[in-house]
Length: 506
Image (tube, rainbow, N blue to C red; front, side, top):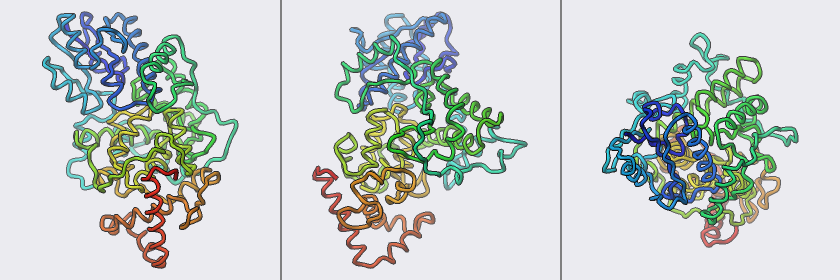
């Protein structure tokens, strides 16, 4: 008798641990407070995972598996994965436990510390194994995603022709930076009404997690593979073709634009990364979508997602504690919905609260950019992202935040910090039109805080970045400013930060 552990982000029938299962083995699944509360997850995320777990367990039973499933409110629930495994081992007389490696160091270590040995099998749902990524990284001075992405294209053959990239180029970034206009005919992602299983879970989450940041209802995410496949088909048919040009755009009244909102389904295992990428490539091959859209979408999964996982496991368990810039400011209350006069942040945080989702530019260039410019503690920023997004798991979230967004890893992920003034947000969105601040003002009480904090950030980190080939030349613009103007910018930025630190609305 053996136990086969299946976690809430491993809802894949072809999971490596399940492939090893014999008819006499017992699959163990458990909703536990240790996982639901190690950070204060968005209620939608908790509901999504629990509902998807319950449905997956039912599918396993229908397929003839024996499943020992623990619900959160079961009276015998010991409320942690290791404790539930020990309880089930005693119940079934099992002395062998098989698991697919978890996606977080925290759980890997917890399983490794159990008194009963747990065999952790590789999670082969990814394109690159840990060993492959380590081999690629070995001896490289710079671990740039672009070079890794090209290797993944060659390995998979996606958008390749006779050994060369389709269209003669590896990426089409220059075609994918257009601002978007409002469009009442834009389809958006497919929505699903809660069924009986999901409705029951919503009631549980409502009762047990009433204080968590985020709105639970309405809830319209898919919670099983059948509906996740429908969401994929809908995206490919209705949104992928225009995804590319407008993937960086932001609109106040259109939170999704052409984005797929499939990441939650992929990261939980309801969809495989391979089938999603193949669907996009097939749509291009059939002439239904433009190349820059198919390539840009595939790059987010085959390139960036795989690269993030590689960095997370290569860098080790201490990665989330890195703070190369020495930032220590507390994340301000506006990140939990406190009023702010900054329209971009107000919209991005409200969307996050309501949907548990915001696309990559909202995360990187609005919420992340502001936290970096303001000098916020990167570990607090990391935990906020882990808390508020439905697709957030540490293996993918931490390198995106600690590395790309906050430059706290000192340049492992990015060759420069992703900082910008208000001009970028104004170019790529309509946020600035409805803002109390003026994006064209560089100083004074109405100046966009991004303008003030941009120069403040560069000035205080001059020793580190003045020689950076990608950002160093900006200092010549700063140096050409009148000395009095520079002093005013820094003074106004300090005053803004002082007001924020004092809890005033900013």
